[in-house]
Length: 497
Image 1 (tube, rainbow, N blue to C red):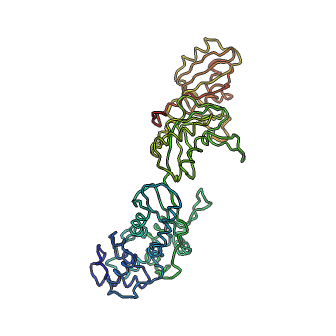
Image 2 (image 1 turned 90 degrees about the vertical axis):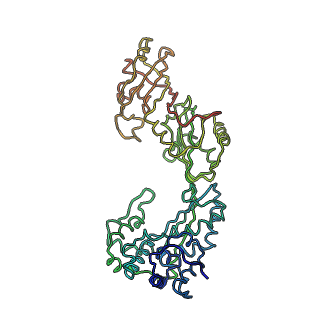
Image 3 (image 1 turned 180 degrees about the vertical axis):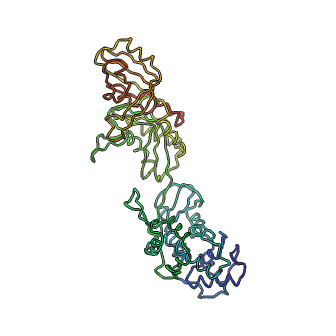
C-alpha cells in the first residue's frame, strides 16, 4: 500500500484532484510530472522511487492499474523516467570516475530541450481550460521544474555512489546535455508569431547561434494569446518517439587561479608564445616556462596567462619581478598544500631564463588587483643609452631636477600594426643619469605604468614629446632596457619564497 500523499497541492478537493490526474494520464504524463502539475512542492515526495510514485498517483484515482503509460512522458520527454533509473545514474557515476577529477562536493547542471517549454505551456493551458478557477493565475514558475525534480531524486543517490555531498553550489559540475531531434521543428510556429525575436544570432564560436533559446522562447510564450497558441500547437501525447537523448556527460571543475611574480633574464624571450604566419619566432616564452610545470600538476585543459603589463622580447624583468596570474580551466587536480606549491615553484625555477616567487592559489576576485596595476602603478627602469655627441656631467645632472614630466606619446610605429592610433598622456615621475663613457650613459626612470620607454629616449620621429633627445639637445637612442620594479603589492609575499 502506498504511503499517504504529503505536501500541499493546488486543489484540496479529492474529486477535482482525481479529474486532473485522469486528464494528464490520458495524455501519457508520467507520475512525477502529474505531481508537478498538481502543484506538489515537497522535495521528499519526489525522492521516492518511480514505483512508489506510481502507486501514490494511482491512489489518487482509486488505484487504476492501467492509469500510467510506460511510454516516454510528453511533458518531460523521459527525463523524469528513463534518466532517473539505475542504468543512467550508473553511467553518470562511471563518467565522473573516469574523468579523474578531484572534488569535495558536486552539483549537476541539466540542459533540457527548448521545446519542453512549449510542451509544459501546452499542458498548463489544457489545465487552465478544464479547471479555470484553479489554474487561471498559475504559470510555470508555480510548478516544480524538471531540472529540480531530477536533482531532488538523483542527488542523494549520486552522493551515496560517489561518497561525496551533493550541494546547491559547488566548484565541480556534472553537466548533462539533453537533446530532442524535433525540438526546433516544434518551435517553428513561434517564428511566425514573432519573427524579429528569432532571427539567427551571430556568436564568436560559430557563425550563428541557436535560433531558439530558453530565454527567447519563454518571452514569446508569455506574450502569446492562448487562442493563437492552441490554434498552432496541439497538446502532446505519449509516444515512443518522445524520448530525448543524453549523448554527453561532461565533468567540469571551476577554474583555479595561481599567482606569483616572475623575473626574466633573457633578451630573446617573449612573454607569451610568439607565433607569426604559423611559425614560431622564439623557442619558448615566459608563459610556457611557467605553465609547463603547472599543467603537469594541475592537469588542466586550457590556460590564460595575464600579468601587470608586459616587457618586450629584448627587455629583462629584474628586481622582485612582475606580478602574474594563470587561469587554469577545468583542472583535474585542485588540492595542493603550500609545500607542494613550493615544489612546483622550484621546478619552474630550473629554467635559466625565468624564475618565479610567491607562487600561490588566489581567489578569482583578487585578480582585479592585477589589472589595476597595469595602469595605476609606478614602474622603474634602467636603460643603457647612446648619444651622438658626448653629454656633459651638467647636462646629465639637469635630468635629475625634472619631476612629474608630462609627455604625449602617439602609438609607437613598432606596435602600430596591432594597436589603434592614439595619443596617450603619461608621466615621468623622476629620472637620473650616470655616465658610462663619452657616448654612453645609464638612465634610471620612475614612470607611470604604460609609458613607452624606448620611444621616450629616441623620440620615435617626434611621435613622443618631449623626449630625452629634446631634453638634452642631442640625438639619443636606447641600447638595452631593464625593468627594475613594478610597484604593485600583489600577490602577498610568502615566507621562504
